[in-house]
Length: 227
Image 1: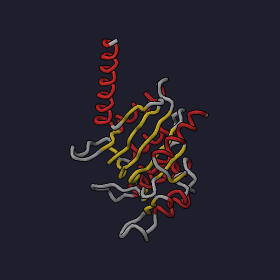
Image 2: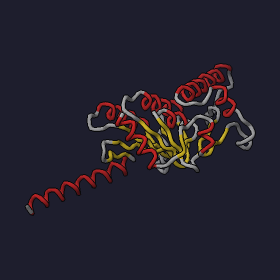
Image 3: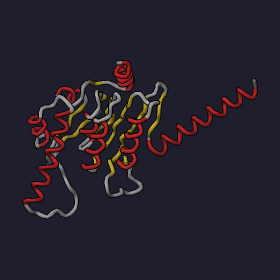
Image 4: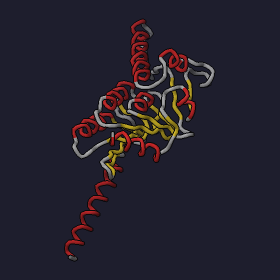
């Protein structure tokens, strides 16, 4: 009996150690009840590596994980926690498309903020929440560095912007024309274009389904799984 208890204790310690390592390395965890937790934090890293001191979400880590979640018989649902300033547009859209294509129930919760390309990720789930103080920033596509001032460059920006607007309007209750108004607003972001939506404002605009926290997000995901 003592030997069995010791083995159970060792197994529990190993499980806790694996969970701590998973949180430290990837910000991911499979919770009791067969729910997988995925965090999207800091800046979404694309084809170029960001400085080591930056908090990042690496799309080359997230995409295989999403494929594994879809293929795993041990995972019934996905909960995504977001607190991101945005980042690489192509990488962010790739993550959003992967989440939207999952056959398993998905719920997102915006904590702190889900800005820029974080908006498509937030709305890509089956149901979305935002805390009262959470923010979402919608603004035109921007690119740092040297940009050649040619018509083709502006066409490229417009095409990328259309892809983002199309995805957001398709996966939320926000209309495309209204999204363009918010994106090009000059009255909210000082000396810049765009709009900041806080908590209930994001719900009123149709981007997010409901104001709520982690408890509401868990209950909704469990209800979707039971269906």
